[in-house]
Image 1 (tube, rainbow, N blue to C red):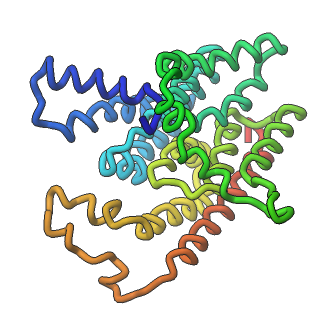
Image 2 (cartoon, rainbow, N blue to C red):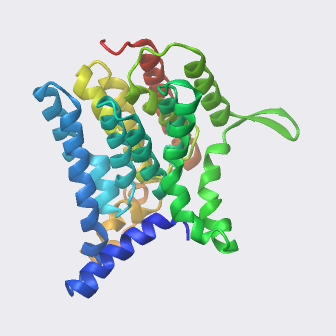
Length: 326
C-alpha cells in the first residue's frame, strides 16, 4: 500500500459493483473515474449551500465545476484527491451549521484517505468549549483513520509504506541550516507558529481561512504533486466567490505557477495523458524540444515555486487580517 486502506476499500467496493454486479468489466477507466464524479458534484453543491447569497453560491458552484485543477487532477490524471476536497469543504459546511462534532468527523473522513487534512484539526479544535470538548473533537477527527488502519497495523509492509510513506517527508525538505548537522525545518516551524497564534489569540477570521493557511504553508515549502493542489482549490473558490476580484492576482499567480510547473514533470503528465487516444503522442518530444529551448529545470521550478510562495504568503497575510464580516 502507498496510501491508507480507505482508498483501496473504496475502489474495491465500486469495482465489485461494476464488475460483478453490473458486468462492466471492460470499462476499467470508467470504473476508476466515475465514482469521483459523485464527490465532484457533492463538492459543488456544498459550495452552493455555504453562501446565504444565491449569487455568490452560484459563482462558487460554477467556478468549481469548471476549474482546470479539478478537471486535470481528477479526470485526466485519475487521482482521488477530489475526495479530500469534498471532506474539507463538508467539514466547513457542518461547522457553519453549528455541527462541530460532525465537522470533526468529516475532517476525519479526509484523513482516512490521505493524512494531509490532519493539519486542519488544530484550527477546528480552537472552537471547542473547554478542554473536554477539544479532546472529543480531536478523537472524532482521528476515528475514521484509526478504524481503517487497525486491521493492518500488524503488517510491517503496511507500516513501512502506507503508515510512514516516503511522500509524507516531502514537506520536511525545506530547511534553514543552523550547523553542519542541524537545521530548522521550515514547514513544521511555521505551522507550529500558526497553531500557537490561533491557540493564544482571539480569532476573528473565518474557519475556511484557518483551513487555507496550513495548506498554503504546506504548498509553499513542499515540492508537491500536481493533483495535490485540488485540496486548496475549494478554499480559493470561496475567496473568489466572497471577495470577487479582491485577491484575483495572488490566486492567478498560484494557478500560473501550478500550470507552468506541469511542463517540468514527466511528459506523461501533459501531452502523454492523451496517448491512449492518440498512440503517436508517445513518441512526441517534450515541449521544450519542440520549441528548441533548453531551460534549467531546477532554476525554472525554483522560480515558479518562488512565485507560488509570494502569492501564498500574501494570502496568509490577508486571511490573518480580515474579519468574518469583511
